[in-house]
Amino acid sequence: MQPIKVLVVEDSLVFRELLVQNLGKDPAIKVVGTAKDPFEARDAILKLKPDVMTLDVELPRMSGIEFLRKLIPQYPLPVVVISSLSDKVFDAMQAGAVDFVAKPAVTNRAQLEDFIKNELLVKIKIASTAKISNIKKTVMMNNQQQQHLAASKSNLIVAIGASTGGTEAIFDVVKGFGTDIPGVVVVQHMPPGFTKMYAKRLNDQCRIQVKEAETGDRVLPGHMLIAPGGDRHMRLVKVNGVYQVECKAGPRVNGHCPSVDVLFDSVARLAGPDAVGIILTGMGGDGAKGLLEMRKAGAKTIGQDESTCVVYGMPKVAYDIGAVEYQEKLSDISARTYSLLNKIR
Image (cartoon, rainbow, N blue to C red):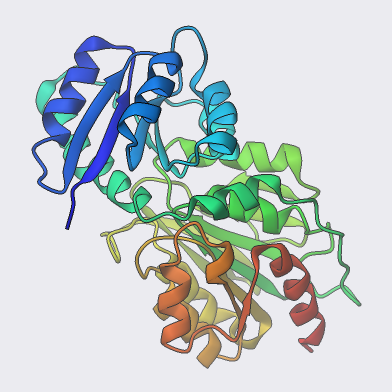
C-alpha cells in the first residue's frame, strides 16, 4: 500500500518542523511538502498532489477558513484542521474540512509528540478515506422544510450519534427540527471544550434550544443536549419519572469517551419503543451495537446512507449487523424522524 501523501500548512516554523519530523516516523505517512501560508499551499497542492492536508486556522496573508472556501470547490482535498480552542473551527468544518484536532496548549516537546502520534495521525488516516464529494454535498445542501408532529408526545426520545463529518451532518438533521420535536440527546466525538461552542453555534442557528449537557439536565421537548467532550460518558436516566442525563467519568468504550454505544444502550433500557435512534457519518463502529439494542427494544432506527456519508463507517457497521431499520440520505433524515415519531403510539 502506498503511504498517505501529506501537505503540512503551518506558519510556525517550530511547530511545522515538529509536525514533519513526527508524522514522517509513521511508515503509512509521507510528508511531501510544507507551506507557511495559503498561497504557498495552493502552489504545493498543484505540484505535489497530496492525499491529505493539515491546515492551521490562523495563517498570514489569508485565513485558513477563507482558503478552505476557495480551495474545496476547485481542488477537492481532505483537510484536517489544527485549531486552538475557538469556534472558528466550525466555520472550517462548514467550509469543507473533514475533521479537526485541538492544538495542545503546551510547549513540552514530549506532550506535543504524543499529540501528533495519538491524535493527529489518527485523524489524517481517517481523512484519507473520506469522500470529498459528500463533504461538498453537505456544504451545498438546501434547508429542509420543517415537519410537524401530529400531536405533542413529550415522553419520546431522539438519540443521535456521529463522528468524522458529524458536526455538519448533525446540523443538517437538526435544522429540520421544530420546537415540537421530543427531547434530543447527542454524542458527537469531539475534543473537550469544543462541544460547548458547538452547542452554542447550533443553538444560534436552529429553531430548537441546544446546550452542552450537564448531569441533572432534563430532556425536554424542543431541546437538545450534547455530551461534553472529554472523559465523561452521557447516559439517559429517569428521576421521579422524568428523563434526565447523567455525565459520568468512565473508561473509553470503542476507543471513545463519550461513546455513542453508552448513550444508545441507556436509551434502549429506559425509553425502549418510545425512541428513535439515528447513526450518522463516522469512522469505526461506535454506536452500532447500541443502535441494535435500541431496535431490539422496539425503537425505530435510522442510518445515514453511504452516498451522503463523509466516512461510511459507523452507519455501515450498524447496517451490517441489522441495527438500521431505515437507511436514508442525509437530507431525508429529519423528515423520516418526524414520520417515525408520528407512528409511535
